[in-house]
Amino acid sequence: MIKSHKTRIYPNENQKGMLEKLFDYSRYCYNLGLETWKEMYNNDEKCTHYKVRDETKTKKQDWEKQYTTNIFETAIEDLNNAFNLFFKDINKHPKFKSKKTAKKSFRIHRKNKTNIKINNEIKSVRIPKTGRNNWIKLAELPRFNGKIKFYTISKKVNKYFISFSIEVENNKELNKTNKSVGIDLGLKDFATVVSEENDELFYEKYNYPKKLITLKNYIKKLRRILSRKQKGSNNYKRVRTKLQEAYLKIQNIKDDFLHKLTKYLIDNFDVITIEDLNIKGMIKNRNLSSSIHESLFYKFKEFLK
Image 1 (spheres, rainbow, N blue to C red):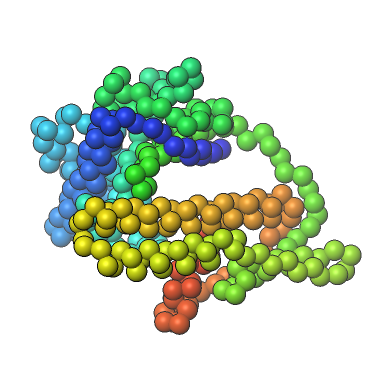
Image 2: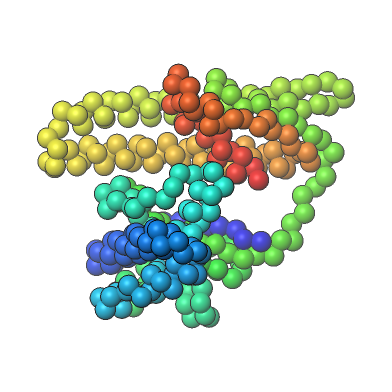
């Protein structure tokens, strides 16, 4: 069983510069792999994960030797996963990642016993090619005991994070409650939970915290202020950072809400039934599209699974 633990890391200024280069290198490898995939497809060659990886390797240049090959391999894996989602009609066709808008992240897989190291005494993690013995401080140590399969480094609004994926033994068994529940998702009320006890139906409604309304109004205010600032100025960058931090806070609040709700449902019910919504059809409705995008129905289902 794989469990994840995400926490902040605190790189120094030199390490921040190295992490930025690793983010860019991961994006470069992804784009290079996508270019190779398209060339092979146009030449009527069969495109598979390993064939694309081997063909892309032939395009690698000497300057890439300064970076760990682990990043190259995981970038090609991400490209393969993107195509799998496209073939399943879940996502759109993969596109080249933009330097300005692409998510900044890269992954490091465990290749051998020494590849992933954590120093409990100084509460640090070893990240290759980042300088100063490659050790970066952690906000907290991984909360799960087990083998770390890989970790992902990411950046959001000038903050750096690491997400550990840890293989643990699944010894925990959920208690049987002999209860079932039905979940109705909606736009007015996020979820209506219907359960039965002693031949009587009980309805519970769950909505996002009211603090989100305050944050959304704050975002509208910041967007108005940002529109009046000269693009590229220090004031523009300062307001833009505040806006990004507000968006991140909203995302964290929503994720926290979804985690707590799904945890409650799993702990208290043996059988969970949820309606099958036609999300794609609902998005086509112009009056509902923005609300559907904010509702996170798909994310709720994934958390529940």
